[in-house]
Image 1 (cartoon, rainbow, N blue to C red):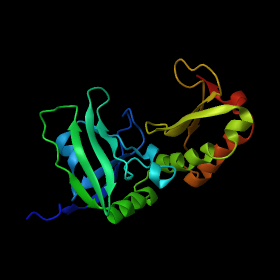
Image 2 (tube, helix red, strand yellow; image 1 turned 120 degrees about the horizontal axis):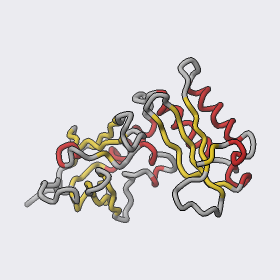
Image 3 (cartoon, one colour; image 1 turned 60 degrees about the vertical axis):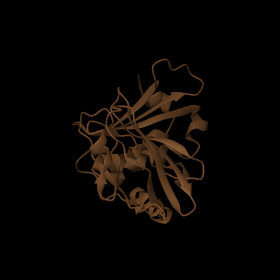
Image 4 (cartoon, rainbow, N blue to C red; image 1 turned 90 degrees about the horizontal axis):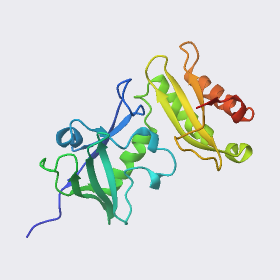
Length: 226
């Protein structure tokens, strides 16, 4: 009689993208039993679960598992498909099943993978808390993002935050994009703050200064139009 499926170990690794890459937030790459499965089955792809999506409550993290099955994109290459998997919690297991490679259906995909749910949850929390991999621009972006997303900034100035972007190409910096609430955005955001990093100031101080700059007065009057 066959026993229960073997239990694998999940690890998450941050990878810094090239300064000219389309996605500038760090990749969060899943390793299964120490293997970078995305590198094996989609070597030209980029991990879709970038660090930009790991803010907020734990149940909203990209790889969070619940009893309700959820199809998750693990990688993409911007034009021709990627790797998808269905994630769900089953008793004390987290199961990754129904793997798909829409980039190249000829490439074999892994079978169902079972993780210990407690180990999986702990690894997600560890990866979110881990900042040891960060470059200065990553630290500033991590601090600025919740700093401008929280509070009553939107209501006060009738604005909507669209996104926070990193710029790794010199001069490095953080860009905060937003729009007027109810405005017509045919081509994305209306306004932006371009916040270049300096070499002589601690990154925490730079993040604090950037947040204060944005929130000091009506951002529609001091931001750059797009």
